[in-house]
Length: 200
Ligand SMILES: Nc1nc2c(c(=O)[nH]1)N[C@H]1C(S)=C(S)[C@@H](COP(=O)(O)O)O[C@H]1N2
Ligand SMILES: [Mo]
Image (cartoon, rainbow, N blue to C red; front, side, top):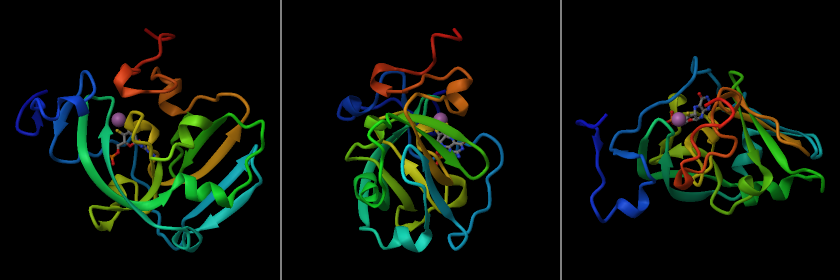
C-alpha cells in the first residue's frame, strides 16, 4: 500500500531498494504472537548442537568488542527501511568465543517466545551481520527485539531474530517457523526469494 508512510524510491535510492519493495520512514513492528518480556540481567544465550555447548550472559556480550552499524532492513511484506542505525557485536567477533564443529553447515536461530528461523552457516558468518542491543542510540525497544536481536542485512528481515536466545548448529537444514509455513528457505531480497515453491 502506498500512502503517507510508504513511498516509491526516488532515482537516487532505487539501487538500494530490492524489487517489489517500498520505502517506509517509520519502523513498523512485525511480530508473530506476543512480545516476550526479557530483562538484560536475565537474558541468556546458548550455543549447542554441532558446536561446543556454552551459555553466554549479557555481561559476556558487553565485554566483546562493540561496533556501530548502518544497515538497510527489508521485510518480505514489502516495506524496506534504509539506514537503520544499530550498535552491538559483530557475528565475526562473537564466533571467536565458540567452537563450531567442521561438519556444521546450517543453523537454527532460537528466540524467547519460541520463534525460530534457519540460516546457512555461510550466510550467518558474513562480515556485515551482528547482534544488536541498541537502535538509533537507545536501548533496543522490546517490540524491536530488545534486549538483543540478530540482524542479517543481506536477507529478508524474518531472518533477523528478535529476542534471540540461542543458535543450534546442524549438519543439515532444519526449517524455522516461517520457512515451514511457506516462506523461502534462504530469503534473498534482490532475488525476491519470498516464498517456497513447495507451497505455491
Ligand atoms: N522472535 C521473532 N523474531 C522476528 C519476528 C518474530 O515474529 N519473532 N519477526 C520477523 C520479521 S517477519 C521481521 S520483518 C522482523 C521485524 O523486525 P521489527 O519488528 O523490529 O521491525 O523481525 C523478524 N524477527
Ligand atoms: Mo517480515
